[in-house]
Length: 451
Image 1: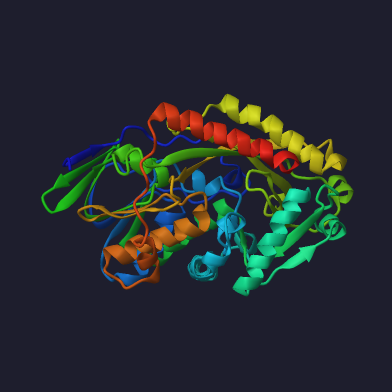
Image 2 (image 1 turned 30 degrees about the horizontal axis):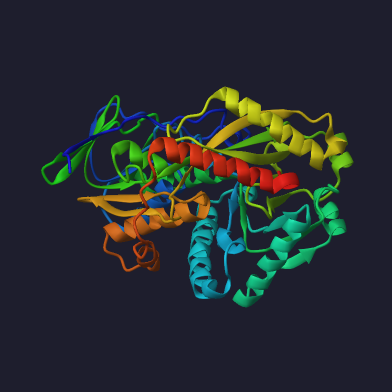
């Protein structure tokens, strides 16, 4: 391996970080503007990076820990997701269930370890209730195919011994205010996050609790990683870090440094958030104060009604694109915003006067065989990347697991993540680009009314 790795590109996140934009001013952190020496460097300040930071602070005594973030805390993908921290495997709706019982039970147990980590952090750092709420989610069905999926899902949950509740169209209307859904399946184990609030409070809590032991630097992207005898030197545009060990918590951006080359799939999803709903609009809508609906078809629309520090709003997410460049234009965000407007109007025709305030795109990283990009990728460089679209829970687990691996700590997370094959190599770029986007479009068409 080369002694020097230069970043081929820097992360770019189109559209505003809406979740962060609706909370009061959060602490900002300095830019790295000199050379520092530390025992640990964490690259990336999202779910994986901050979970790694908290875990390191828990199990190390005098080690110094630094974290560098390319933009600002909660401005990147961690503040752009839909805020569902899900305990159940996402793949329950595909293939034969009979061979998956033991595997799914193991993953549920691990996912719940991530959920407990978030709940413990919320309590330790006195986070507002809306940052982490154990309110569950609903798998909404809008057609026969959706109801069939939910029926199969419920059968498998019975086999797993997991709680669930079937909801009629009347019950769905009573919860959401919308007559759009034919039925639903309530799944109580999900945590609902205000993702930017959670990440901001997590970063601040770790910082305040660990004094000079832990430092965060914003606007400090890693642009070069260089081997320096038995240590590493990481350069940023205005500073550098000398460190013994590195946790790479940058999801798909790991490929920019030459890790897992041609093995990671870079996908964007798109979302819109309304302006604050007025009292009159809330009356017209009806339903409960807050709820979250995931689509029974994964390519459909995810919808949340939120209430909190900055009022009541509705968030809707749909549309997917495969973009190996890890960049999309503001024009595309705007174009797909029209689709979100249509999906919103289909569900809430009584809110025709409601306007969207924010539109954005969020980066995901997938592998062809749905495995993490995890492990020691160079001497004392540990990857906690590729969450396969489940960044809140899997990112948390990856961050904890990378630390456990790096410190030789016995861990069920490490044992699980090391049990997978490496991410499969992708077909040549033209084939993978055309093929992936064709599959996405076909699946979106198949989602039909659920979009």
